[in-house]
Length: 435
Ligand code: KL2
Image 1 (cartoon, rainbow, N blue to C red):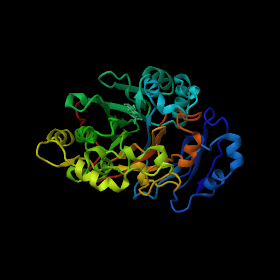
Image 2: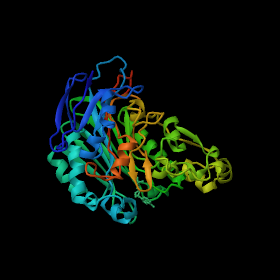
Image 3: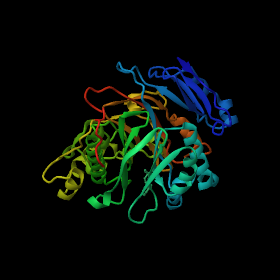
Image 4: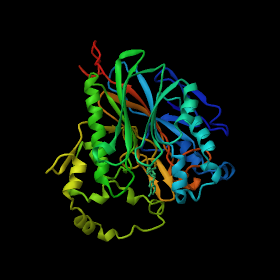
């Protein structure tokens, strides 16, 4: 099956509704092309769009995003599905604090009123069941709009001087909030970042419960120890909530400020990391994502010296080890979850993904072009489709985000998940846990 819809100029204001024959549901799809997963050969529609300079001149870069379906699922009814968005929407305050990152962006595209409209139109067009946002500093602006579309919301502001935080919204008719908690990492000596955790129950299938986490990990590229500590702590809290509510599956959304090539990514996927094998200043991979490096305009500096650099900088202080691992005299950081990344598991076009299947870029501004956003999920769930990101060349043509169609310097990540039958697991017990 392959369906494509051409984006009209009014793609955001007039969502299209396309039947998804696999699920027998109607999914509102805007500015999207729908096709089956095919990693080896990008579809004709990709190349037709891509190599048409006329079109590019008339309409600007072709910023159409495509739904990609996952491979076949294990046997089961697969009835209970839900969609999750993770989106760093770029705080209004951060636009002014880091103006040099957006010097290529027209001032109108940086204006909050414009960005709020574009971001909300995108979210409403996607019509997701759960929305996890980061860098939210105008929560009530968003709540006002999303409430009218049937969402409830929760917000956790960062500690310290920052005015932004994390926000979660969920469709009230689809999910009941059983329990919500927020994490202030400052309480554990892990800086001023915050995270949220919510436990939901599907209203139409009360045996289906779900833990959803939302985090904006510390930015500082040199402080991989703190990033590890924050991620470890979030996983551990998510695990506790999952056990408490009947061993329920978990989705962890967010901006992890770490790239797919980084040791921190490895930590997330393999649940452990031997810190002695890594330069503590290179745990996040952020330093290798300057647009000029990624676009091949500049040769990577000091590439010959990387091994020596790694050797000399790999010494960790006891305090840094403690921050990363949370236990003294131990070199292995661990977290209790078995996680997969939904984009890595639903392969997209070769033009949008790296060798591991992760997007080539989820964020683009003057100092960064790469991937830091993820939708992680645990056993008991499978991603059935994702909204593909954009090819690097298309992002390059925008000159930098935000742009006319995208209201942030990040792209939204969107995945549909299905509950899987796991024997004796994720079936909530008769008597609910008491919160
Ligand atoms: O990388 V981000 O953008 O997830 O998109 O998270 C942080 C950065 C966000 C919140 O701290 O502000 C951005 N250079 C570039 N960007 C920065 C810097 C910086 N020095 N400090 C914060 N941010």
